[in-house]
Structure formats: C-alpha cells, structure tokens
Length: 365
Image 1 (spheres, one colour):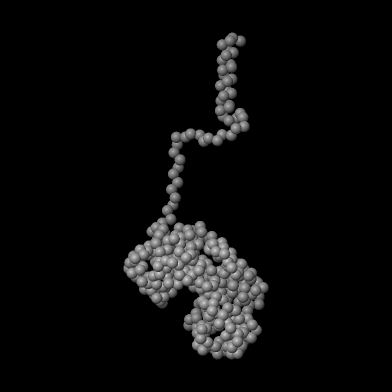
Image 2 (spheres, one colour):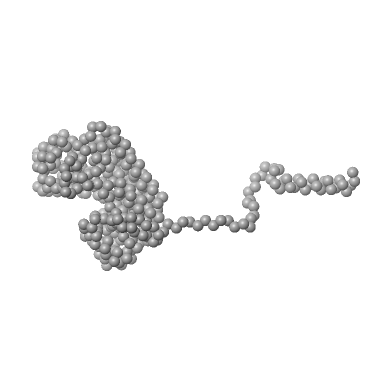
C-alpha cells in the first residue's frame, strides 16, 4: 500500500467519525440547543371576546362593546358576584342597600349611592360618575325599574336587567356576568359549584318518601294585621318543594305569590296539616320577636307545627343566606336541614365552603 493511499484512507475514516459524532449517535450528552431556521413561526391571533351580546331578564339583547370599566350596580347580591369574579374595582356607584351588604368589600360599600331599584336613581349623580354599564334588578317594570331602563337608554348607558324567579336563574346570572366581564373561567367555577350543590339537593329529595307539609310565612311586625304567606310563583316558596317537602300554600290558587291572610284564615286552611312552620325575616331582631310571639300566643297553638314545637326562623337578605345570588344555595340547604335533619348535611358546612372558597371570608357559625 502506497503512502498516499494510506493517508487518504485515514482521512476518509476521520471524516466519517466526525459525521457520526455530529449526528449525536456517539456519547451521552443530550442536545439542548434548537436548530437555527430561517422559516417564520406561525402567528397565533387570540379570538377577541368583545363585543359580546347577552340576553338579559327583560328580554333585551344587550351588546357590550368592550370590558366595562365604570359600573353602577344597584344590588348587593350582584356586587357579590362581581367581587368573586375579581372585577369589584370597576364599581363606581351603588344602590342604597348595597352599603349594608357585609358580603361585599368596604371599598364597594363606600362608593357613591345613586338611588335604588324601587325608588329610582339620582340621574345627576349617575351622569357625574360616567358609567359605561348599569346592573339593576328587573321586576317587569312594576317599580322604578322600567323608568331606570328608559332613562338609561335615552342617555346611551348600557343596562343589564337581572332577576331570579327560580333558583336556577341565579346560576344563569353568574354565567351572564362572567361573559360580560370576560371572566368566564371563574364564573364557570362558581356556576358549576352551585349546580353540583343543587343536583345533590335533588338527589337527596328524590330519596325522601315521607314528605312533610310545610308553611312559610313572613315574620309579622304587627300580629293584628294580615300575614304574608309564600305561595306559588315565589322563588323562596319553591325551595320547600325542591328539598322534598310539600308547600301547603301551593294547594290554593292565589292571585299573587305573596298573599296576605288573617291568622284565622291560615288556621282554617292548614292548621291541622302544617308539620313545619318556617318564619322568614330580613331582620334578626324582628325574626326573634316574631318566633317568641308565635310560640307563646295561645291562638297560634291551633297550628299543628306550633303545638309540636316545629317552628323555625330563617334569616333572609344581607343578614342571612336566603337571598338572590350565590348565597341562595346555602339557604336551600338551611331549609332542607330544618325540615329533614336526618337527610341533609349541616347547612353550616355549605356556608363555610362557599364563603371560604369563593368569597375569601372565614365563616363563624
């Protein structure tokens, strides 16, 4: 073999070894750098969320052109949802009763008051706040809600009218507000929690065979006057049936969901049938006074539930859990626990879960 041929052979072998080493097949070190390429990466364009369209509870289609930044909210329970969604800082004005809601932050309760769903708004104050959205309750135009809607439209201020004629409506409101503020993920988390708790109630109720007869009344402040009964058409009245009991007021065809009846009429209708009497009030002092009066007044002993010691108070509104918004779920479990303590879990555990998971509050039972 010539020297030249040997040299060429060695050179060829060296080139082959270098080629193999460069391919990563020799050695244990992993390749950490990406290959350089002159090709452009594909551009990913996020789908814009706005404008969004929602149908509110007045049946109107409302277009939200951009994320609301200056909002007037007239009810505490809707402000609670906004807080859970993390958009409480957009609130610039509130309804007169929002300032009494302990479930919304102080920074919201301290905002300028513009009026109320029932009495109407101070439009000079409203205009000065330069809102890009008003969130209000809808009562079918029976109160100042119709006037508020009309005036806001004249001023070009978008309005979302919300209501809750059923428990499920509260879940729908959460979903609507999540879409309005671009917070669908958090809204879905809350809505799913509410739905799961509601489904569990339905499951428990389906297993109850011995349905109790229940009457729900508003705590009287003056026992000499007619007493309000929660009948068909009332969202709160529907909870009795939801938890697996019979609402006795459903037996009568009243012209209103909240008929006012004398005690004598209540006794004649349901005195011997009422297994459980539930008394509701927005005020704890009024509730306790009414409960005491019912238990000690001999006339009320004509009602079976009073005689047998099955009279219970439920606090409503911002002082309790029986209210519109997410807290209604706790109210349902509270009523279920009152009527069927052997079937339902302690409602306080549900209150604790809701407040600590979504409100960021500690619950002290």
